[in-house]
Image 1 (tube, chains in turn green, orange):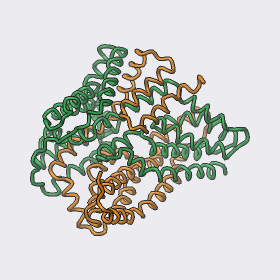
Image 2: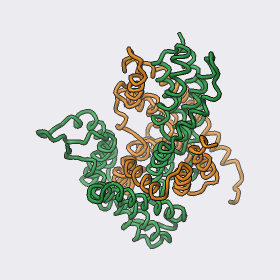
Image 3: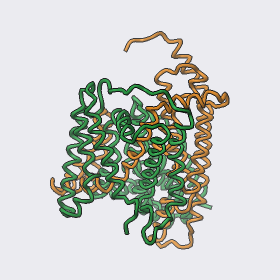
Image 4: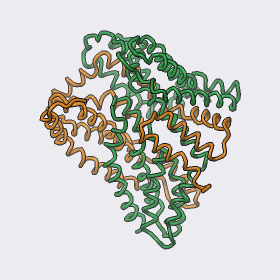
Length: 324
Length: 235
């Protein structure tokens, strides 16, 4: 079942935008690192442009191997420390700003169109073909919103999509390889799963629990959710491991805890971990890069007091609400 | 000893991030060591890397929004947002963040987390608004204060959405918990109950973060004053 706005099509669009970055960056003669940067972005565009096609034509093994080589090359290029733009980027003379509504309309279109995508457009079908690919709502919503806002921006300011891609190289250049980090970390999470890291964490947590205790397993479950989420960068990956390893045997079966509050609030303990870890790159590291923060851990540092406070509160909530 | 080998990647990550080595390189080394310690050969590891990297491509979705942000900022979006905010005297940095927190909670509760986010709203709209409001009140902001405000904008989005989207019954977390309960043979719990048990945590998140935000405006004022009073120091 293919949709008019398909996942594959959006991946190709991402690939084209990234590839154009490589080309636009080459024109910045003031940037001493422009060749390394162009090579990096060029390589990063390949899995988006050709990933699906290669898996079909070469078979999974060969395609994954090729993608693996790209991953290693990206990491080595990033390790050289020369992907981020250095020196002056060529600035186009700034035009006189158009009236406020012309600039704000496209900016506000991004959330409005994403809202429409998840509410109305997701159900729209032409015959048997759905308009939007529903397998990945975030990707589709961002894609449709990005394109609509870009077209609106073109109409209202006169700036073409090509100018837009060229101007976004300041964002790409300043953020550099941090933009690839979410995917690299998701990959590492996959390696952790393949290596059965969850079993080791579970073993570590369980070794501290004796029979007949109530407070200790609650604390270990809450802390364990937070810590294992910090390792995996994702509370959903930590949840089944910690819940099957601790919550189910020691609290639900052992102490008669109510499952609904225990697990729902246990998940929130995991989110406290998400706020504290660079492994959750798309929430903590990419924003720091896009906001051009000198301290890449600043978002985590600002979140830390709230996260730690909430972790303590959530553990107390489990203790109070799950045993009644 | 054998049972600790899967965790080998964790100290590598901690050490690498602490030493501020390049993050991509650290991830590659941690992944390679974890795989090697658990008996994967080079080719199997390469394939695993490639497979997981391809499977995670949707995480780059934010790239689709960067061109329009680049375009609008080229035409002076930040200047226009500043003009809008400066005219409203009641708009302080902390109040804007609080209002955003509430709106972001609503998107979560009604199951529309994609309607806002770090690229969709924080970078183009919220961060410039917060900075402009602080600037209008306190004058030129020193770089550390600017960084603090931007980081607060990002943090506000994360905290609000994480603890509110669990309340919506069709969100992934609720479905995951529901599936776990069915797998474990525990019957009689509906997704609605799971969603309702998300409410105490969401209220606590709101309370804790609002207490912090309530003190933010005063903290900014103090930092700006201290910065002005301090003699200029060399690098």
